[in-house]
Every structure is written in structure tokens, then in C-alpha cells.
Image 1: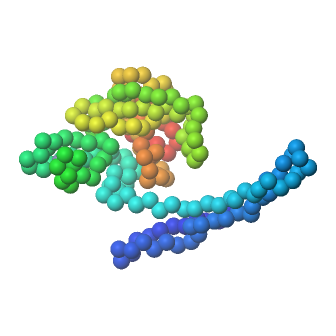
Image 2: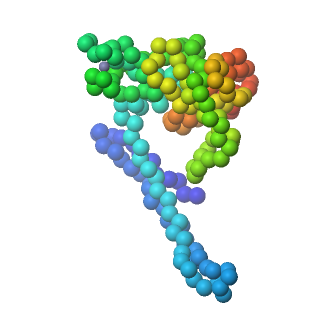
Image 3: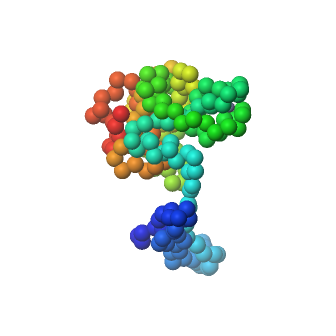
Amino acid sequence: MSISGTVTVRNNRYQPQGDFHRIDRNTPIRDADAGWRLLGVTNPRDMVYIHSYGGEAVFFESLGRGRLMAARCDSPGCDSRGTIFQPFRIHCSDCLGRNTVFDMTELAQKTARVHTFMVCERSGAFNVLEKPIKFINIEFDGVATILMSYLSVGRPEIGMRVVPIFRRVDPTYTILDLSWVPEGTAEADLPQGFAF
Ligand SMILES: [Zn+2]
């Protein structure tokens, strides 16, 4: 497998390097029931997608450092002033002002609990999570929104107290670097690369 494309920003410009569009040799599609006559071809091709985080970058950078960042509206005069949002949102949905970045790691450790959950035995293309995937919606004291994530240890139950864990070793800089385990889970039982 060749090395896929990488991007660096210099002088405020994207500088892509390497291979962003790959094509593999195609193959014929033949009819096994009709003398192997030609019906078509496969077209194997692959692309590297460039995903910009913009103002949400601080959220993803912080996961690998073991911190869960939220956003809070501090705009004077906004009805939502003081409201904490998780998932992170750059702007307040009421006043459209720029939110303040708020470190809610301790708040999550002390108050996170399962609002509801969904266990998925099957998944779609490009899934990298172990199946069954235990998706959980998490609520926190003082936070106006509910976070979608996944439980890494045990079985989810409504109301269950959970604590965040972070992929501190080789982070992917995606939402998968954040996961949850039941309160009281031992460090030794965490998935590889994760820590409290
Ligand atoms: Zn606001």
C-alpha cells in the first residue's frame, strides 16, 4: 500500500503532499450462468478527503491530552448566557456570538450518566469500532445538550454513571479518541491506548 496524501498549512495555505487519488487495476464482471459473458467492470478507486476542523480543532486536539472541551455562551444580553454546549459548538445558536471554550473534564468525571443507548450488532463501511457497538447518549449536570459517544467496557443502562476515557497513545484526532466506561472501572480494563 502506498503512503496516502498528507497536508500541512504554511503561510496560511494548505500544502498537500503525496497521493490523494488512487486507482487500482479494474476487473471484469462476468455472468457465471451464461458462458462467462462480459457484463461490466469494477472501478476500484480511492481518495483522501481533507476535513477542516476550523474553530472545533481545540476540541479534537484536547482529547489526545485527556481533556474534554465544551463551549459556553458568555454574551451579555443573550438568553442562553452561561449555557454549556457539548457537543462543542463554535457559535451560540441563540445570539450567534462566538462561544467561550470551557474545559468540562471534571464536570464529566463527576456527573456524566447514560441518557439512553443503542447496541448495534452490525455496522457500515469504514467502521473501526469493535462490534457490538454500544452507542450511548450522555447527559451532564449543567449542560444543555446531550453527547453521542460509545461505551468501551460493560453493558449500558439508562442512568448508569460513566466516566470519560481518552486515547492518549497515537490519537486519531477524531471523535473516536473519546470513549466512556462505567464509573469504578479499573485502569487495567481500558482499551489499548486509552487512559482516564
Ligand atoms: Zn448566546
